[in-house]
Image 1 (tube, rainbow, N blue to C red):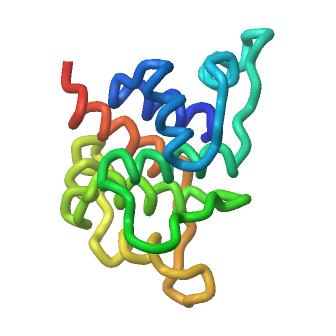
Image 2: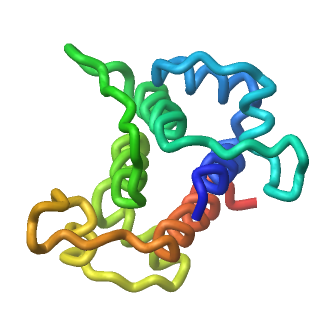
Length: 153
């Protein structure tokens, strides 16, 4: 799953306008133009398509957290240079203030059955032996499940 797919999915799920997308990037610490956002949201077949880097997507996700939860005290989060599916899921969990049960419920709506222990393995540090990589299929189904939850029409 590409970063552009994730950005398009989140835009659709929450029905963000171009202006809102620009604002979210700004909250995350990155100034972007309307044309940049537009190019990131285009399909790969489009001549104006541009891939969004991990760091730029991290700025967007950090902005989404700040938009939904408010700024935290002290140091603000720094956008990571590389993002894994695990980190994306963690940022979405924080932004949407979701508990493990809510994430499992979203996945169940997409007929993905995983245990609470399997889910917690996705949130562990990569150095821990119980850590598991989150595969694209689970992240894709989680994003589709969010669409059903937040945009049921």
